Image (cartoon, rainbow, N blue to C red; front, side):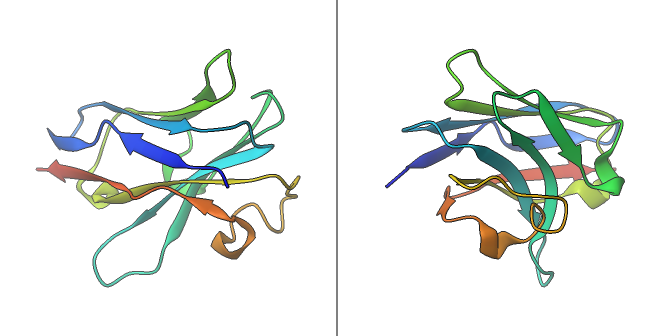
Amino acid sequence: EVQLVESGGGSVPAGGSLRLSCAASAYTWTMAWFRQAPEKEREWVAALSAVGLLTYYADPVKDRFTISRDVTNTTLYLHMNSLKPEDTAMYYCAATQRRLGSASRGDPEEYGYWGQGTQVTVFS
């Protein structure tokens, strides 16, 4: 069982930045960030595979967010720049031992491990 613990959320003005962290109890092949706003479905944000050499982003965050891992490959980060009010959501870290392709890395059902979430609020 892999445990994931997120941190780093907060409340920032539009245009601001935040860095989310996710500490994992063990290495997993694929890690990702999802987010869920009130009354909306969980939405894939970004994913990272292998040792962090392969990264993928959802269109709404491309060129604003950066996903990365530390050198131990057990801490996942999400650097968020140019934040917008529509980025407001609970952000979740997710992981799986599987190697996910383009058709599955955005599907929350493919991830067996989840953190408790960290709230990000962007105000205008």
